[in-house]
Length: 292
Image (cartoon, rainbow, N blue to C red; front, side):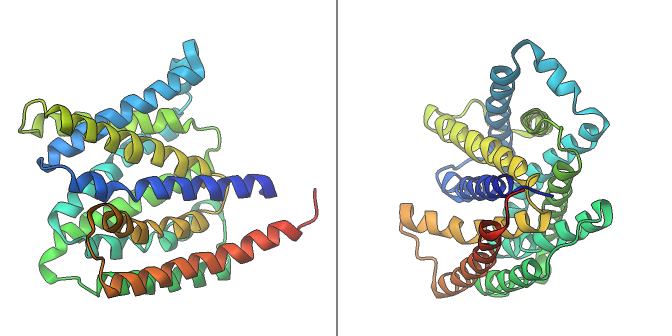
C-alpha cells in the first residue's frame, strides 16, 4: 500500500512536472526554426542535463545505473523517444486543439494499461474527475477536429499512448533509474532528428532558448513526472497531467498577451475544478488515514 507521505510526494512531483511541461508553448513561440531542428536541439540539451544528473548522483557507477535498466529499459527508452518526437511533430501537422483533445485521454489509457498489466484498478472518483476534465478540454478545443488532420491526430495518439505505457512501466519497475531512462530516450530522439536538421548552428539567442526548452520540458519535467508517477496510481498521474492543457495557454497569455478566448477560460476552469475536486478528497483521505 502506498504510504501517505509517498503519495503526497508523488502528487507534488507529478504536479511540478506538469507545470514545467506546460511551458513548452512559451519556448515554441520564441523560436523560428524547423521542426527537426527544434526537436533535435531540445532533445540534445535535455539529454545532456539528465546525463549530468546521472553522473552527479552515481559518479563512477553511472554505467551501472544505465545497465540496471535491463530488458525493461530496452522497451522504455524507445517509447520515451517516440513520445518526445511525436508530440512536437503532431503540433506541426494539426491544430493544438486536436493534440490537446487526444492528450486528454491519457488518464483513461493509463488506467486501462495499469489494470491489464498490474491489476491496478482506478477509483470511481478518479474516472469521474477524468471524464469531467475531458469535457473541459473539449470546451477548450471547441470540438475543433477536422477530417484532414488525421496524420497529426494519429501522432498525438502515439504520443499519448507511448507516454501512458512508460508511466505504467515506472510503476511496474520501481527500481528503474528514471534519469538514465530519460537521458537515453532524449539521446535517441536527438540521433533520429540530427540528419534531418536543415540549419547550421542556431544563433546564440536561439541556443539559449533551445537549452531552456530541453532542460525544462524534455529533461526535468519528464523526470519529475515519471518519478512521481511511480508513487501514485497511473490514472491519478494522468488526471493531474491534464492541467497542462490549461496552464499552457495561461503562460502564453501572461508573457505574450495572447487572449486565450472565452472557451479556453471556461474549459480551463472545468479542468481545474475537476482535478481540485479529486485531489481535495484524495488528500483529505490521506490526512485522516491512521498511521501504519
